[in-house]
Image (cartoon, rainbow over all chains, first blue to last red; front, side, top):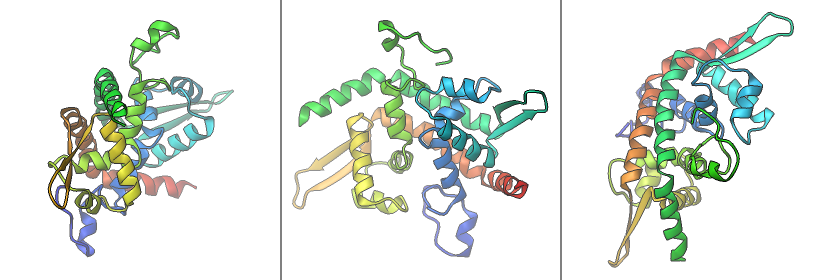
Length: 130
Length: 130
């Protein structure tokens, strides 16, 4: 990832998020998209129903959460389980890959939550400059 | 982060990315925004000039990269250094907090790059379902 692969037929074999066409770049955009991080992180405590997940992620619309879950399911990060009960019971949970991704995102989230005082101070300094 | 803080005056003391108004949520959105991840990751090898960084991040426009760098600078994640030479020489580098964030993002990126075969296979299965 630290060097740019040359363009050409063999370049496609090297996954590189810095390259527009790479699958890893698309997955990165899904996982880190506006709602991707919070959706994956919100699933890390185990299987959860759509509405419970939606309540957990303050501000997400029904449509956006559905789209995000669908993209994550397509990438094999989220598993949708529908039990044939009446009424049908649908739950979402992380795949093994999803759990690995969640671990890394949680590390990032905890760092950012712990950094709020530092970031707020930097923002005040920056805004005072102008 | 695993429990929702109660609303009320003291709730603001608990950083929680799941809450819309929290500074950590705003920083998460900057860091994981469309170009945030790639900008932070692109800076991890040390100070770099704007145009070199732009070449590294395939597909980013001048305007978007400038906006992303500015938001990251405001949050204290990126440091902009202008040397008073002729012509002026401007470089961008990560702060200490920026380096900690980059470490976590690189972990995520490497996982996703390594997961391309698994994700591609999941996508094929998903698309074959319909």
